Image (cartoon, helix red, strand yellow):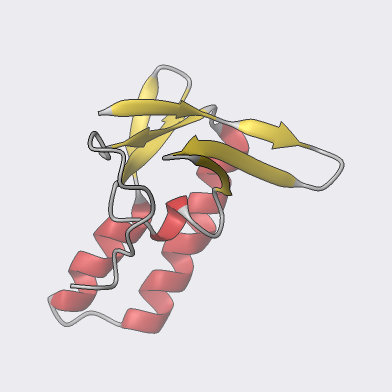
Length: 100
C-alpha cells in the first residue's frame, strides 16, 4: 500500500494526487477507484465510505441513498485529510470499483 499526498489548489477548489503516470482529481478518480483504501486524516486512515456503501448495495440495501451519503462523507474526509491510501502497488492507475 502506498500513500498519495494531496496537492491542494485553493484558487480552483481542486485536490489532486499523483496516480500512476499523471495528476488526477480525487473527486472524480480516487473516490470511484477500486484501489482507494481510505483517506489519511491526522495519523488515522479512515476507510473509503464508497466501499462500505457498495457492499451494502450488494447485500440488498438502498443503492441511491447509500452511495450519495458515501460520496458526501468522502468529500468531508478529503476536506479534513492530507493523503489517500492506495492499494495500487502495480501502478495500474484508475480502475472503477463499479466494474466487475
